[in-house]
Amino acid sequence: MEAAANATAGGYSRYGSTVHKQVYIYGSLDKSPTELTRNYGMAWGIGGWLLTPFLGKIGLEGILRLRERVAAGLKTTFASTYAAEVSLSEALALDSLAAYAQQATGQKYLIRPDLDH
Image 1: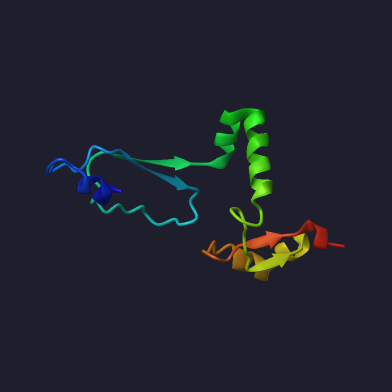
Image 2: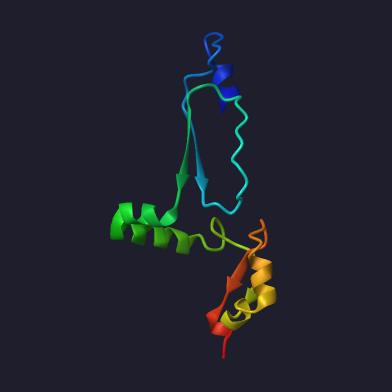
């Protein structure tokens, strides 16, 4: 974004563009420190974002609109793949716990209570 903003800038500014850039960090699967490479000027912000407080802010009507949007896009926009599908009892097995406790990218587990008998 900063490169694009500077391409149309009227002149050089040691502080970069005046276009505000905003980054949101969702969740905390990666426990390492957040590192920022300061090549985006001085007009920027960073914040955290979690789903539950957001849903509280938008109320029931907003939640229902989002639910419809997600349901409509389950096979496209919101499609997911899983490393494994496990029953509820399998999810409690030590080997499954060890696998999904790693919180690794591309290693989501889908817990399927309907697989239990």
